[in-house]
Length: 212
Image 1 (cartoon, rainbow, N blue to C red):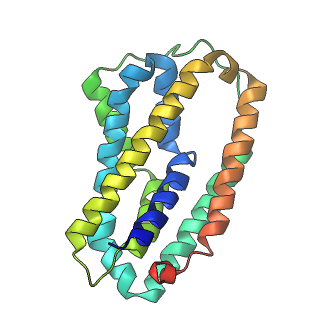
Image 2: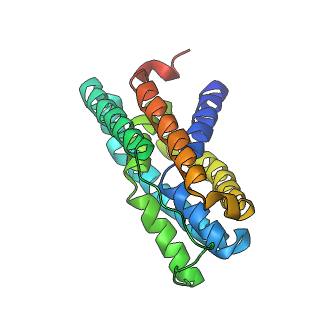
């Protein structure tokens, strides 16, 4: 894998990981309820789910997208439409004041938190759309698929581990502030705006990103 291809994927991975989604919401929720250290189990589950999605996208559907410009365009369009809709829904989502951090949440065991994290990412439409539409662009069909996929997956997991722990730590530190209606409304505006911007940006993604 060429250095510039990996670097481009590295940057894209940071943008994807930092975008709000169900994984970020779960990390922040458990950061509030359990603290950062115990949320590591949840985040480990998230990474297992991410690996599963990337393995399927890179080894299966990804090959089809590399071979078919039509399939790629369809997936890209569906992904962009989904992100625009998700961002608009987040922007307009009603907010209610919450109680104390973790109030009313059942205490989950380590195994339960890992399973919940894995299920969250494995069934997360945003994660599936991004990996199916973006991951194949960084795979050279003439090169060894297994090695390239291993490098991309390791990069994604490494970045996502850092970002999800960051979300959990932020939620734990700002627990009192994040419970107010005004703050949660602001979060919806920011997160919704980011999602819509990413949806619009996905429309401009070209299959030739690997070239050069």
